Amino acid sequence: MEQVLIAGAWRAAAEPAGSFRAVDPASGEAIGPAFPRSGAQDVEDAVAAATAVADGLAATSPATIAAFLERYADGIDAAKDELVATAHAETALPKTPRLADVELPRTSGQLRQAAAAVRAYAWTHPVIDTKAGLRAHYAPLHQPVLVFGPNNFPFAFNAVAGSDFASAIAARNPVIAKAHPSHPATSRLLARIAHQAVLDAGLPAASVQLLYDVEGALGLRLAGDRRIGAIGFTGSRSGGLALKAAADPAGIPIYAEMSSVNPVFILRGALRERGSALAQEYFASGTMGSGQFCTNPGVVMVPAGAEGDAFVDAAAAHFAAAAPAVLFSTGVQKHLVDGVAALRTAGAAVVAGKAAAEGPGARYTPSLLAVSGADFLAQARALQQEAFGPVSLVVRYADAAQAEAIARAFDGNLTGSLFTATDRSDDADAARIAAALRPRVGRLINDKWPTGVAVSAAMQHGGPYPSTSHAGFTSVGMPAAIRRFAALHAYDNVRDERLPAELRNANPGGVQRLVDGAWTTADIA
Image 1 (spheres, rainbow, N blue to C red):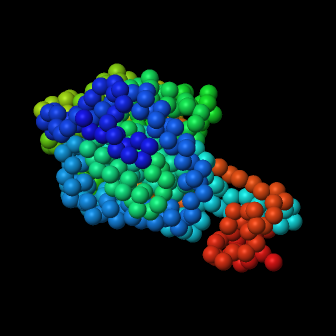
Image 2 (cartoon, one colour):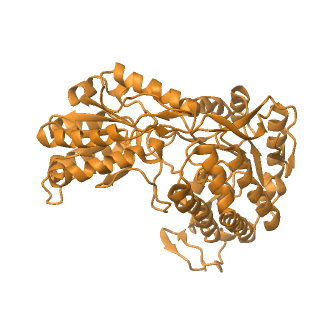
Image 3 (cartoon, rainbow, N blue to C red):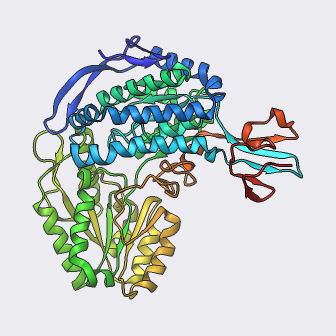
C-alpha cells in the first residue's frame, strides 16, 4: 500500500483498518495502487506530532511561512502535467480547460495570495489604542488545524493544497489533511510537493501531514479531540453536521461549507430582452462540471406567462439533448437519485431529461424539473433540497409579490442571483426581491450565473446556515479566509519589546495598523 505522511516522514500505515483504490468514474473500474484507511494509531501519531510542532510553527517568521507557500506554488506549477493527468484519471474532469487552465492555476495562485497576505501582515489586523494601553491582533492558534477535502475540486479545495490548507498554514498552524478518497493519488502527489517545500523552507517537518481516509467513527473521534484547534470542511450537509456535533462538546470551531441551491431569479424584462441567450447560459451553468459545483444554479425562478414558457421550452431542449454526465462516484450518483426522488415526491415534475442514472460508471442524465410558485411555497423546505449534479428545478412565479415571498422562503445559500432588463424596467421588482434575498445569501449576484468563484480579497464564499456553519467567514479570498484559523490576542499594558512585531511602536515594515481609530503605517511616537 501507499505510505502516509506522518510526523514529518513517509511511512507505512500503522495497523490500517483496510485499504481502497481510486475508481475511474467514467468506467466504474478501480485504478492505481491501494491506499490505506488509517486506524487509531495513525490518527494518534498525526495529532501528537502536529501538537508537538504547533508552538514552533507559531513562532516561525512570516517570511519563512511565505517562502514555503511560494515554494509550494512553484512546485505545483512545475508538476502540472502529472497532476492534471492523475486528477483527470480519478475524477473524469476534463484536462483542459477545467484542470490545466482553470483549477490548477487557481490553486497555485491562491497559495501565492496567502503568501502576500502573510508578508503584509494583512490577516493579523493590528489594532492599537494608545490611551488605554491596549493592542490586539489575530495570531496563530498554537494547535493543529484538521482539514477535510471535498470530492469536486481535486486541486483548489484539496485538503493538502486548497484554500483551507493555505489559510491554516498562513496563520502558522500545522495541518492534518484528511484527503477525499475520490482522488487519493492526486492528494499524494500534492503532499509530496508540500513536504519537500516544508523541508526546503525550514518549517517543522510535521507542519503538513496526510491521511488518505479513516473510518467514520474514528473521524468523528478525531474531530472531537481537544488538541485540535479548528476544523475546515467542504462536503455534504450530513457530513458537516456530524463533524460539528462531534467538535462542539470539545469547543472546537468548525468552518463547514455544506450545501446550497443558489437561487436565481429571472425577471420579465430580462426575458424579453435576451430570453433565448439566458436559456443557453442556464444550461451551461447548470451542467458545468456535470453540475457538481457548490454554486450550481439548483433552483431558478421564472415568471409564468408566454415569455417564461418560451424560456423553459428553450432550456428544456438543451437539457433533453445532453448526453449522460459523468459524476465523481457512485455515491454521488446515489445521493442525486435520492435527491431527485425527494423533489418529485414534493411535487416537482420532470420536464426534460430522463432524470435517471444511465450508462457505465457513475452517470446521470441532465434533467430539468418544474413546479409552480404556489406549490413551491407550500413545500419550500422539501423543494430546496440540494440535488448535487446536472439537475435543476424551475419555479414558475405568478408575479413580483410571489417572487418576493419565494425569496423569503429560502434557507441560507452561498449565492443568490437576479437577472434584470438593461432598460431598468425590472428595477422596482428587483429591489424588492434583492432585499428579501440579501440576508439569505453570502454573495448577491446581478446578471451573472453563480458558477465560478473568483479568488479575491473581496470574495465571500460562504453564507448563512445551512450553506455553511458560520455566516461570518469565507473559505475563499485572502486575508479574510486566514482569520478562520486564528485567535484574537489582546495585550494590556505590555512593554513594547515584549509585543509581537506588528504591535510595537516602531513599524519598519510599513504594516497597515488601526491606531487610535485611524489606519496608518506610521511609527507610534
